Image (cartoon, rainbow, N blue to C red; front, side, top):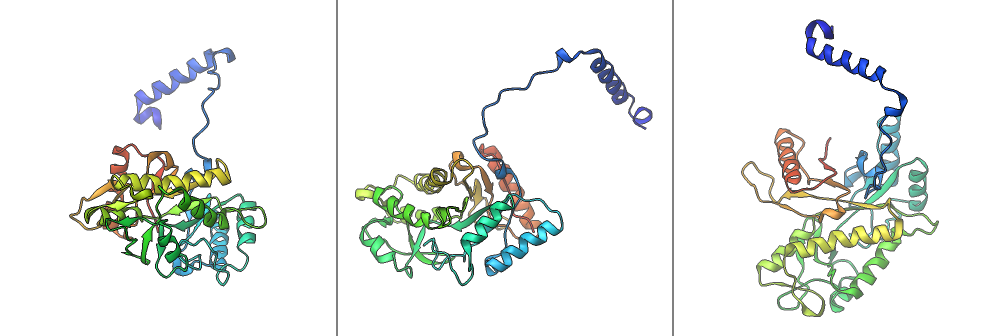
Length: 307
């Protein structure tokens, strides 16, 4: 069939076979000694998760069983935003996850990894909010106040990643899930898009960090936010730890908007997604546009939500 329809291809194939047969074993190209990949293999594999309305132990176990029953391969699972008792306090909700440490260990025994949704917000209804504000662990506006910002999960202020005392406190919270009582721990975080909210402070006169030093711009905060999650996860969990974050995303998802920007620093981009899109053709076009923008901007290892 190939020969009758594609004579040139057939000739090339014959030449390759002849030349290959003529070569001896000594002509085989030796294996290359390549540098190790900067991120673990599971960064390239499919990740699965339920909507946060189904974020509990039973639904998560059922999800993984269903994928296994249909022989659909995946490398890790994300537990979405309602897994904690308060957003970003890293305290597992035991009513939803009765045996969280056992769940993580069972996922690891199955050869899979697990990450948790997180952002850099501390909400006003979090019991830690006032203490964090008083100790200047939170970014402040030009008047020196940790003025709450409205985001999609309530109202809160952003963690100040320039404050070393704030980082000691923040890491101690992260340890609640990175270092579980049974010696295990989660493998990373899906760091959602809280960083653009600092633009509200910047647009209204500035954002103050440690020792009242103003943030120089949006990307300074974004780099610190994603970098802190990535670096500390690696410090605790080793080179298999990673975060999931956004390369380029667009601030508005309509047919005319082109307000798009690179968010994560490239060194954390082990596994990224280009933001949330509608499950329709418009969403697919938006996804494709952001994938192309991310490629133009030099990001690697990212994709889109599907399903």
